[in-house]
Length: 507
Ligand code: NAD
Image (cartoon, rainbow, N blue to C red; front, side, top):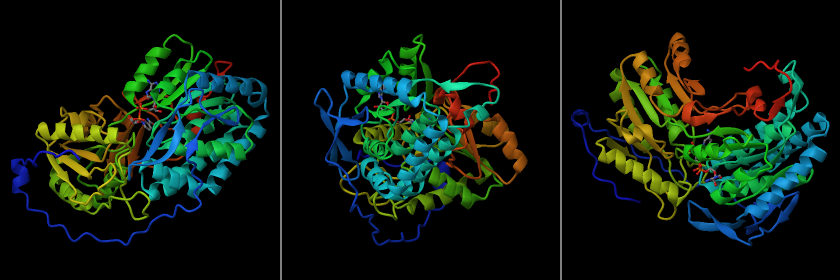
């Protein structure tokens, strides 16, 4: 890890009493068994219901970020492979999936949900092995929510006319979908489930560092006997994504990832007639008022930025705290981060796992160095980090102002920036003072204040006295540079449908 400069203290920091941390609890290891997880050494592409070697004959390593060991070799799809996948999707859409009775499509989507549940242990283990996130999160959040999205959308498949009364919805057609590495299986489910339920066929490209669960999902699609070509999975890096974006026979592209890549996709699709939805970055703020239940708020803040290594688009990476409780909250927070268990993602006691890749670790380190150079005070957990792999300590910056880079740029790592406010109006102004607008959290005892604040927040989701809660029935998406379009809920279906009259009421 990069050596960070010595901690700098402001006058206020010096006058505060030294925190005395209790002894850290030591837990016996509780390793998740990998027996019976049927990982392959090499994965090809899933095109037209068959496994096909990439035409360029190239595979790349997928690495376990906690150990730096190669887990498997994954195919690098080129233009010709992407073209074969789009052609297969077009035939499947026009001949099989589009004309199929909606109730039959619903059965397939329901069957996929059941198979995800049946193979949940395998999927959770692979997700943690390939991506570095704690098994507790893969097992209790990612996999159940992925199954939940297929269940939810199976229910809509034959009721689309009821979702949009008075309109005649039809599928968009062939959809390209590109997803990031932070929730590999869940993002695949968010994209595939509504697309399939609405009668579209898909070419999906997972992120290059975390392709394995999408490829095991392809095995599940085979097991569900989904007709060939309905879902095609092409693995590879940004070049594969670029080939998909540029393919002339797509009707729609759905992208989740960084704002920079999303904006470049938007530019290249301008004027092409293709539909586009973008789910991009975030810089969410927690706003904690002096009447909030502080211990509950601390748990929500810690869960929202550290338990997932900060690898969440809607991670609460900014903390706006009412001035009168700043010191009390900071003390509680620093005591709490000292007790976060950082380490082996496959240990069931682990709270915080490995950073997903060495590139991401370098990005986090560079921004943290910028924060120190700009004069903010860095507090880090003193936990012991493993010798191998990509790791970063839970980190809190105090003395931050809105102009600092750490308060403005998405860090996508376990780093929290603390700022203060005096009045609700100032809190709103500071929380909205960002290029992003994905989510926010409000912590207060007063219901009326929650409603007052929520109305004024420019964020797609506002959580109250909780954080990072997801439900397939609840739409998720951003304002401003966090993108456009919604995923989940009735609103999420709209992105995969065309309407043949003007009676649709948006909502
Ligand atoms: P990224 O933009 O680097 O990559 C995302 C995907 O795009 C990957 O599959 C990648 O291979 C592909 N890609 C890269 N360059 C491309 C190009 N030129 N053309 C087409 N495809 C290309 O993002 P990332 O680092 O994988 O993911 C982290 C980002 O994703 C963060 O900014 C995070 O906030 C965002 N995210 C947003 C949401 C949301 O719902 N809003 C959810 C998860 C992640």
